[in-house]
Figure 1 (spheres, rainbow, N blue to C red):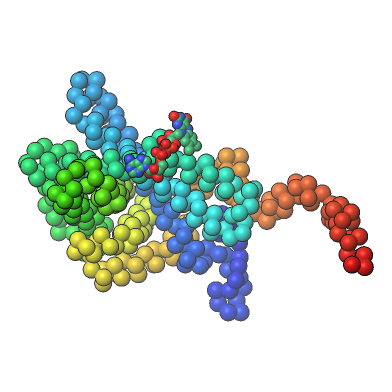
Figure 2: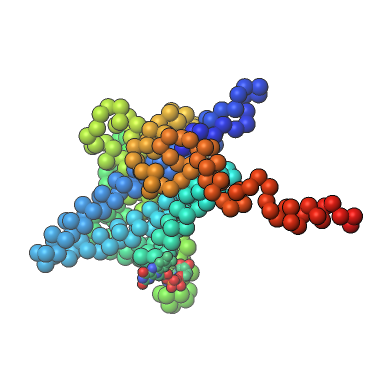
Length: 351
Ligand SMILES: Cc1cc2nc3c(=O)[nH]c(=O)nc-3n(C[C@H](O)[C@H](O)[C@H](O)COP(=O)(O)OP(=O)(O)OC[C@H]3O[C@@H](n4cnc5c(N)ncnc54)[C@H](O)[C@@H]3O)c2cc1C
């Protein structure tokens, strides 16, 4: 809201100050996080569906899919807590000085969210559990043993579709191949280290940064895939579907560019491909800019819940900030008593 209300600086010399949301850098800060909300929502729905399937199987005495649910929950907990914490901090910084004011609600929102990285399973520890599952499944797959559905791609890549280059489907395939490639590379590193150290635990610790990267890329691939498959099958009006498709495209390109090192290493994308994708991302930011306020309104958070002078239904940001500032005891009088009592005599003395 603050980005739509605040006007600052000049986009064109001599022209009036624009809403700060007109700046591409501001759009880049905010719009990928709006897309992220939908990625988390759709991935969470998928995990919940799996939870129901697993619960039904367990009631029949079949626990085969339990590790799959455990690992998916670890992966989604780690990425969603990390993404939402980063998102809140980015939004806070995107408000400039106002983001530091307690009445913006953003500092308290940040502190009540960042702890999700630590509790209910510390994120690094959870990601290492995901990595252990990836390595175990990769090794099982190489030996021809059965592996569960979400990790089959590690050793048995599905047939490549003839997807148009850089299409959504092509990006998902690039994610899948890059993730499999990273697991393969890390497993080789783990074997080499084990041969040197003759101790699995030391070798594991030596490779743990790479292992966390494997878990992050696999988890991001899952989120991208769920975002795309949901948007492709969602029942919504043409206009709503069109906005969701743009958000999904933005999410895929954004995370492809953030992970570009993995794509270049696996040879799935070239420097020229990444440059083309970046150009498309900038166009998407401009296209989605008019949707920013309606999308955030659609979350339907009530003012009482947000408790923010910056994020309120009526956009009266400055009036609310002023009203809130008036509540401070320091603002009860125009000039503080302390001035008359201590500063004025000092300033009028002949020191
Ligand atoms: C706000 C809040 C509320 C909480 N509420 C509850 C509650 O209601 N009930 C409850 O029981 N607990 C609660 N906790 C505790 C929480 O579950 C633990 O803090 C959490 O599990 C992390 O454990 P720890 O604090 O011992 O950190 P540590 O495990 O000591 O982690 C410290 C650092 O060591 C790293 N580390 C630890 N182990 C490994 C490893 N094997 N490999 C690599 N790195 C590792 C971590 O990544 C982290 O960087 C709460 C915590 C917070 C912050």
